[in-house]
Length: 85
Picture 1 (cartoon, helix red, strand yellow):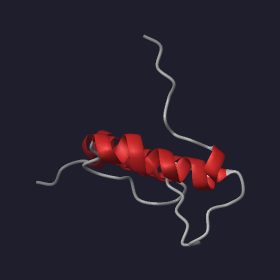
Picture 2: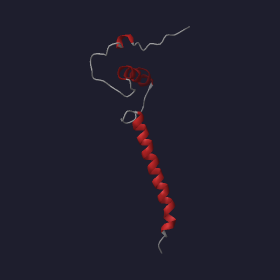
Picture 3: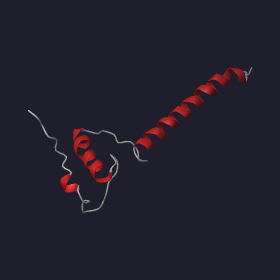
Picture 4: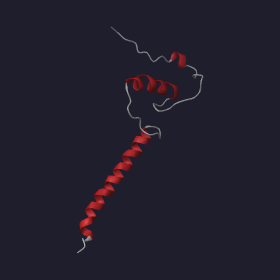
C-alpha cells in the first residue's frame, strides 16, 4: 500500500525551506565578504593587523593588493592608536 502524497507535502515544504535558508545564508556571507568565501580560523593577528592593513590599503576588510608601492597618504595613515594613561 502506497503513501498518499498529502502525507509527504509537509516534508517537501520543510526540505525546500531549509534549502532556501541555506542558499540565503550563503549569499549573505559571500556578499559581506566581497564575493569571497568566508575566512575560517581568524586569530588576533589576522583581525588586528592583517585585516586592518587591508582596510587601510583597499577600503575593504577582504581586499588585497599586489601593488608594491603604497598609495599616497598611506605613510601618514598610522595604525597605532593613541593611548591615554
